[in-house]
Image (cartoon, rainbow over all chains, first blue to last red):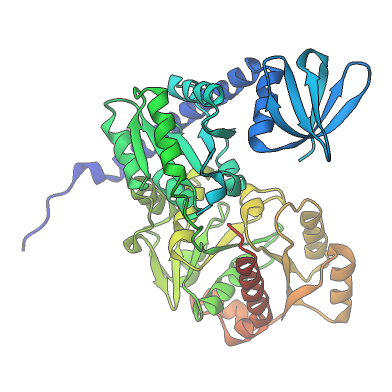
Length: 105
Length: 359
């Protein structure tokens, strides 16, 4: 009777070792990605976050020095200012006046 | 197609330490040709943001960018642009096994990647229907999770294509319960899904009207691989039931589920344990099954302690225990008791679909 030759790569021990190696490789890759996320956060500026808010169309509250705050959607980020759209008006705020950004939705 | 975003498509990237991703994001911001709506570093975030993403740019170097996930994203209507290390043929094959819309080497200039992403956004597709994910969970102390999961899957399988996956790491008993072969099991299925993004029928087992993935004898499958088997299962089955074992209420699979079933044993300790599980619950509102129910006091105690009205009540019956020990199909008494639960599940599933749920 004809028998198929045994494939050595399907030996249970080899399968087990390959699964273990894959898990280890994935752990290394995951650590690398976590590090990349940390680096991205460390190198980010407030202007970058305002750009994100504009791209995502997020509803934000921009707190300025002097205690005033403006809520609305970020519709533009210039070189030195950010534009927050409120109901009837677009408010231009100097970036160096912004002390905090709160993302509402 | 979402024509409103053709002008400035919404693009997300899978965040990576490799140079191509930072270059792409910097150029996208500087040129404003696309809107960068996210740099995702958690697999679940892609599903969460699915409605806000036209194109996902994903590198094959990320461990969770796999054929099964790429197919799941495409079913959500997202176009996928895969990036692989230049000359890395296995990585390129991995992307194509997931049927990416386009693949480029990471040596491709960022401007070209950006133009390809823009071109892909024009063809954003309508989300496809995916299978309904229903984990069956319960507190410690053998409240009858596996038996309820099996009987519920059995009754659902009569109406829709149903897969039952044994994810109970502590006691993966479905193969023994159904008299099935211990192999192929979950780890074998995970290996196949990792390579091709699909669950091959040869790695599933048949039990009556059901398709079953039995649990491995040892908990050797990582959460990521389990998730991939589920992604693949949802691509080819209408209902995917998970026998999840005694997990905490904030388990990741619960948060991702469409529906969930909580099994509560009718004993005093069973009710208190179920109440504790319900306190930490982060999944969809659970459908409660009261198992081995006693008299009227039991029902009152369950309402008071767990805070849920049972969707199904199973009286204590030796026939259920005997069937489970004889590797027989679920007894008629159990199937009948779970019929109201099946109806609730089907009704909720239909409502979710009508509401355009992407999950």
